[in-house]
Length: 140
Image: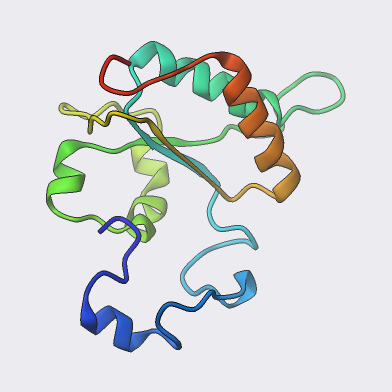
């Protein structure tokens, strides 16, 4: 599945299956909070633009300019069919940024996963996303 740990071999390779791992001990991830980006599905093109504005809006400097652009990867139906892992999607953020797949993955409830943001920016991003009014899902 998307989050890994779904098969016996993967569970045996982890230190303690089913146990939480401290952020500082995560392997293959850059930065303390993982690579910067948003992974999502179940949102339409207009809603993706609103999502980008909401997340990047909390990352502004004192003069109102964006501190940095946040890459957004939209999951495809093919990603879900081939059982892509979240770690792989995050490692491909540069190539996937702002690319709308031929067949975007659909869902009844949208998925928005924030990566690489410190806790304060995660909270501010969630508030901004909720305030933006996007609803997503199959009708999104």
